[in-house]
Length: 84
View 1 (cartoon, one colour):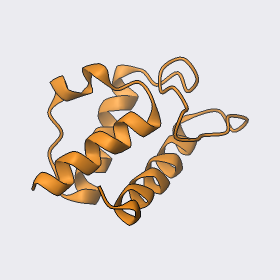
View 2 (cartoon, rainbow, N blue to C red):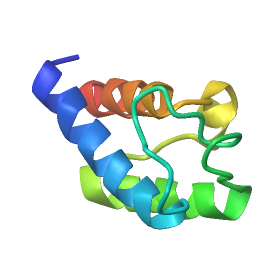
View 3 (cartoon, one colour):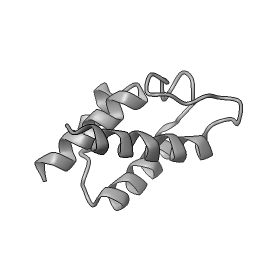
View 4 (spheres, rainbow, N blue to C red):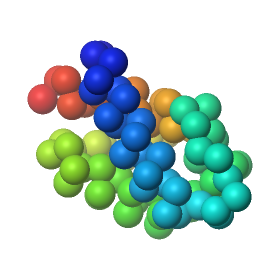
């Protein structure tokens, strides 16, 4: 995973998540999507669709089972992106 690629993904995720979360939450790579941002399944699916469109990838739903933090989601996206 190249640093530029990962940084671009983190930047996009933080931007998108910022619009879904409360304004007072500081989003970092270690931010927990569920406990800190209260991302429910509908918000998560909408986020995934935006990510898939932005990076022209397809993220399998079952791959999200182990994703809890922004970093884990960014790593998953980077892995899928580099495999395609």
